[in-house]
Image (cartoon, rainbow, N blue to C red; front, side):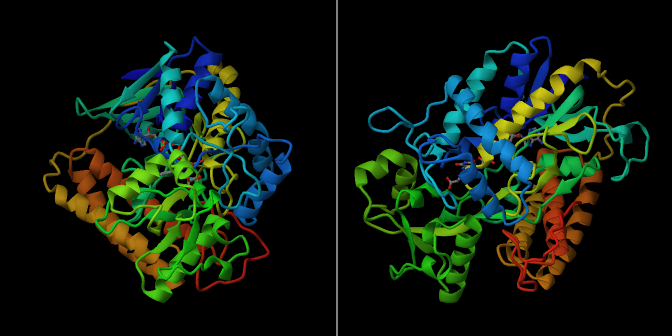
Length: 534
Ligand code: FAD
Ligand code: SIN
């Protein structure tokens, strides 16, 4: 058994920032950070475009950033949360700059080189070339290392959150006083399942893009935290709002994850065209290539369906070569590696699953519906994104909420005690899951189901078909799970099936087209806006 005052599951921007903040404020607290692979592998590491924050008050303002966020969110943002994140954002970004994060400056080095992305009315994206996430992850790993009260445990896979359920109570979703006492965790090196007791647990497990066939998310993005919180009977909200990034690189060889061509490329002047070189975004939105993501992704999807082409194109041939390469070195190199020279050829692009706007429902201090359980980052639904996230607001959200979680817990943790009497993990299965092919095949099926029936365009009949198929996969996987030794692959499959169910069920509940949820059965947005909580 291991004990920590604060147990943080995840070492991306949400998890590490929370750990650093708490360690700074309370050097007497023992903080353990778990990560299922290595400390640096996360969605955070792959972020390209940057962090949105109001920086140049001569041209920009909080009210403009608020307006853009609300506009993208299509009526479902929580106004108070948007205000909080936008107004506290610049302070939080300044902190990571003070910790060593480098953001690109203008030629005179006097100010930051602020980029523009879809849905933003001003240039307000701080970035480090097209490697912003890598730079932030590097900074956070180095900063966390400075604190002797932070211990990062690599290759520790969290299986389940511990609640009263594990000491014999019948826990239901409507029970008001569910509490979290830590987590059961698989030590991937010793293959033992360890009990981690904690006074406070923070879930920061990131996204779930691996539930779709094409995704920009790395293979770790399997929605474990959301699935664990759901099994623990926590409230999950807005899962139908899955963001498809309009411009992932189309690579006929196929790859997982697919490579992202940042929206910042369009902010830099790249223009969407069809294979004839004809611009098509005018037909869909007056902001053309820089309209919010839901609009651009649907437009590309529609153009592909109408033309029968397997991709659309991003034309950068008119842009300054030197500046392009300086700003987007990774994108340039990646395109060249598949035989596309962005200065001579149009870049082939397709939409790909990129971000889940929904997740563990938390309040303005990052508190979930379960006592002693907080959540931070992409696994949450804070109310910031509503029905569609504004580009580059995700890293910002994690920074702001990490700070708020610290504020909420630094006093109260002193009056919380470790729960006594937590039993060891009860292993039911004895069989080795020898047939790995069963797991990989089920994961493939799941991704096909979600991509075919719960993708960019939905309908009642497609959603029903998805849920019928998911139910079969669920039953098969549960039998395998209960009969087998625990393995990360099997657990990830189980979590992804839960994510598939949550997305499909929430989508079926929303009888309107709004933001990222577009259905051919319900056109008009309803006047009465309902959150979808499961
Ligand atoms: P992550 O960074 O994904 O970290 C999750 C952590 O949880 C990892 O350490 C993982 O190992 C751990 N974990 C997961 N499950 C378990 C488990 N069961 N047990 C133990 N540990 C576990 N957003 C922006 O704002 N701007 C951008 O420019 C931008 N670009 C992006 C580009 C790409 C290609 C992608 C994929 C995303 C981009 N995003 C961007 C989104 C943003 O990067 C993510 O939303 C954000 O980084 C998520 O941070 P996080 O801390 O919540 O999760
Ligand atoms: C991008 O660089 O296009 C991604 C930005 C984001 O996901 O916010």
